[in-house]
View 1 (cartoon, helix red, strand yellow):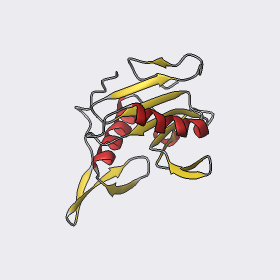
View 2: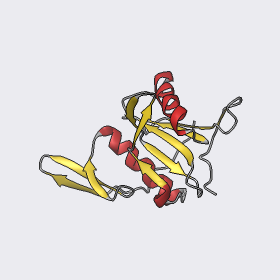
View 3: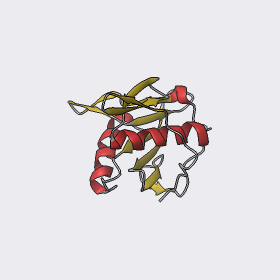
View 4: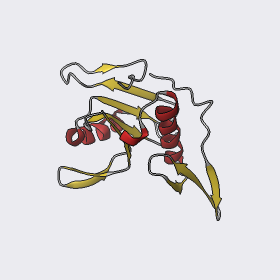
Length: 146
């Protein structure tokens, strides 16, 4: 398991009627702050501000087809050749990272074909090196962006 330190991450929040919105630095717009969005935004800011992943090479909640079914991935980080490099699946804090979560990510992986996988609910974070599909390696640190 990986333990990202979110203690210095500051989300940009604002009220919107009786709800709260958060500024998404990738989509460059205010989005409704749900429990899952809270996790996604902390992860995005950690990847951009702490890990120095380039925001311009990150996609958030884009549509893909898994088989014939339309789906939306949470986060994909692309390499400098614009190929999927890291696929992240975010869950709300009360949703455990489980085999079911991994299956969902693997369904997306079948279409996206990224080098790394990341699963998180904000409390549990797992990252795997999937470059060798015969030998998936679970990591103790997030990969450095090269």
